[in-house]
View (cartoon, helix red, strand yellow):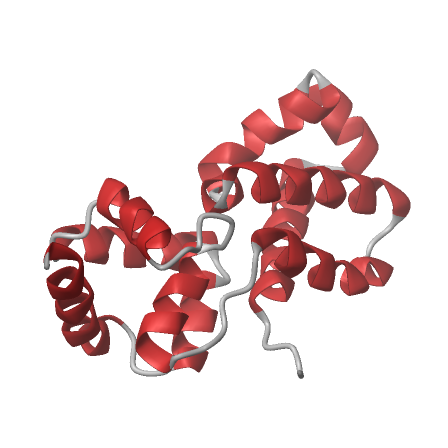
Length: 164
């Protein structure tokens, strides 16, 4: 009973959060706007723990919350994070070898742990985890601004609509 009510309430609240699947994709593609959406969901009573439960409820443990929201609002098929990451890799051609290595590392973290790994606040941790020190990361990838641009810019590819 609670699950049905929860989904019904969420379905009713969605129009105030985003008006189309395209808008959801655009919001979800950037860490800053994704964070604002998650805060708006929390303000409406959808805590992160509840959203995790919702993923379990719709058998989407290995999917991104984006897919769950898209499934509920627009009846779209859910895509496992591993498939989403694999599809985004076609865009690796836009990056140099060092950037591809770093993005591949980020994608592995995303597949393993979820969308929280794509948050701006995680960038320094990811760089240290991969390179042991920020100085080493900068030596491999360039200045922090270009590293951040690569990290954030690539996320749009994760959420772009892929032709079936």
